[in-house]
Length: 149
Image 1 (cartoon, rainbow, N blue to C red):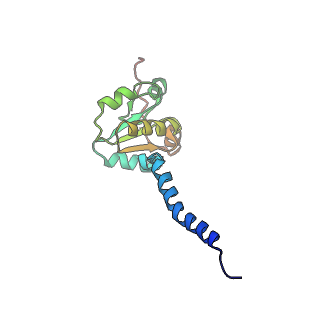
Image 2: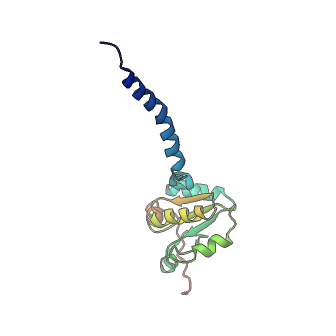
Image 3: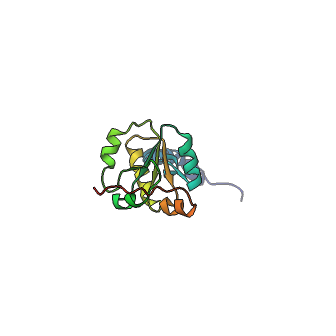
């Protein structure tokens, strides 16, 4: 009763032998995807501000449209609208700089961080909640009027 037939034994051997081979082939064919969480840091408003303050050569980027940027922005932020200008910015900004990116609610800044990652930048930070979160935390906002483009 406890005996295993020779046919069953050969089947088990094939499974034990072929399984690692299939796993190896499968893992090789997977694209080398890096999770977004390893491409940039998504920080709370307070963490974002603290990290930005500590980095002396960081660039603060507002990816909202110019009309929104004109009304209110974080002091010293550079406006590079998500819908235009990212390609040119990626070609001109030093890739060693830390980029602190924010938008209105947090979605576009994540996309912009991924864009910059694909262009070779590695020190990337996105602010969770965007300007909505910034204002909710009662953080300082620059409202100095800017000229229309």
